Amino acid sequence: MDAPALRTERLVLLPLGAADIDEIAAMYADAEVMRHVADGVRSRAETTAALGASENCWRSNGWGLWAIRDAATGGLLGEGGLRPTAVIEGAAADFGITLGRRSRGSGLATEAGAAIIDDAWNRYGGDLIHATVLPDDTSNSAVLRRLGFTMTGVRTVQGQPHQIWVMSRKP
Ligand SMILES: CC(C)(COP(=O)(O)OP(=O)(O)OC[C@H]1O[C@@H](n2cnc3c(N)ncnc32)[C@H](O)[C@@H]1OP(=O)(O)O)[C@@H](O)C(=O)NCCC(=O)NCCS
Image 1 (cartoon, rainbow, N blue to C red):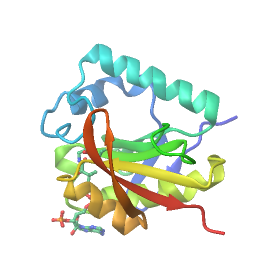
Image 2 (image 1 turned 180 degrees about the vertical axis):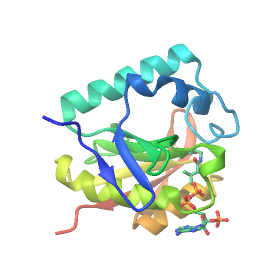
Image 3 (image 1 turned 90 degrees about the horizontal axis):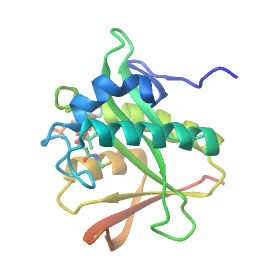
Image 4 (image 1 turned 30 degrees about the vertical axis):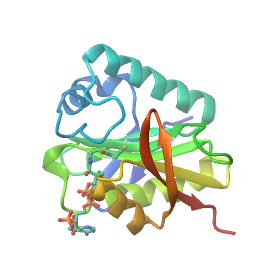
């Protein structure tokens, strides 16, 4: 079977994996980019492990994280999609997007997120997708609101209070 791909006006998305190591390692090493991401900056070894986990997730679940690339140049702009999780009952997938510094502020996360969520309902068998957000991460919550997620409350995740945002499958 061909690898899945998503296309939008400005972006092309492909499953995130080992081939993305050089570009994604540079983004994961940027402390400003990783300020609101669990566990912060990642070493190259941690990035290699994360890419392995991404490939495994695609293999075992048929859904996962996407490398978000510029449709015109092919350059990596960020990553986003679904990670397996067990934070709240009924939602086995946690949605998130991370963009490199230069790619923010022009609607690219919203554009990628809309394509990812649309597609996710065809791949993911559950009826609920959630996202966990640090309370001061207003850029992230703005993206979730634009995509149609709703904030349901605050819960401690990995020792820190996080907002819990959810989206349900449309009937
Ligand atoms: C979360 C994150 C991806 C959001 O990126 P973003 O650039 O703010 O989001 P968007 O791409 O949707 O862009 C929205 C901004 O572009 C502007 N914009 C311009 N054109 C737009 C368009 N066509 N559609 C939507 N917004 C547009 C909006 O006004 C907004 O600007 P503002 O922040 O000044 O209000 C980014 O902050 C990030 O990577 N953070 C670090 C990683 C992280 O913590 N991720 C979450 C945990 S996994």
